[in-house]
Image 1 (cartoon, rainbow, N blue to C red):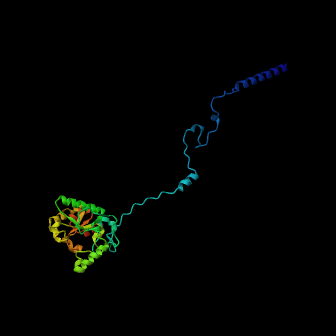
Image 2: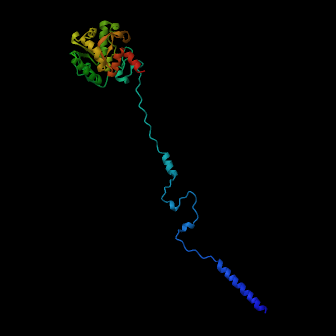
Image 3: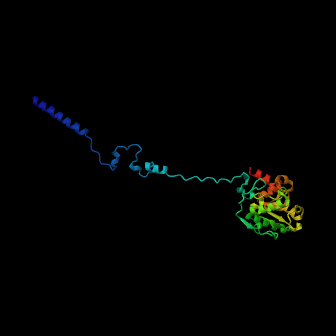
Length: 286
């Protein structure tokens, strides 16, 4: 009777084990449509992934590029032009860079070989004895005296030029002749030694009128023509260089006939200030 019991127990155990195995088994998953990259490990930080290909990645310049840029020569910086020296003179020699404002007097001289490069014959009436270079002025001054003469004629004023440019050599002969005639001390009051004459600048001209027989005389200042010059010369850029009130300061006697071109702006200021040009230019260039 025991055998059947054992067989029955074994059969029951076998049945129970088979049932447990069937209930706990997991069914396989179906393949998905997702990319296999889904299951790949994540990329390292800061490394671009396949879904960021459209983004711009800023790369640092290579060592070679950096070296090329650093070695490129820099363009030279243009220096500002240097303004001309405003000194009136150096060791008694006039500063030519002052151009039409150049100062020449008893203490300041021009170089012996100085002659303006832009001399032209002024298109005005001259006395018959004035010929050659003595009819010439620097271009700007020549144009200015032409304007003055036209203005004078329009006002009924008769004027003629008597002497414009004079070279150093010409002044040597002229000054020596005056010294021989009147002595050096007297000649120095109305004539400049060679190199010290404004006529050598090409910016000065002597004028006169028929009322004084075209002579260079102080009586010109009392004539209608002389008074017109004193009142209107500055309007054309000229000054009466040697005024009676400043004889001691300039070292020259009154010369109502001697016109010096300095430009309209400066001539108007000198006229308004009523001072000698020597003083005006000294204060102007400070």
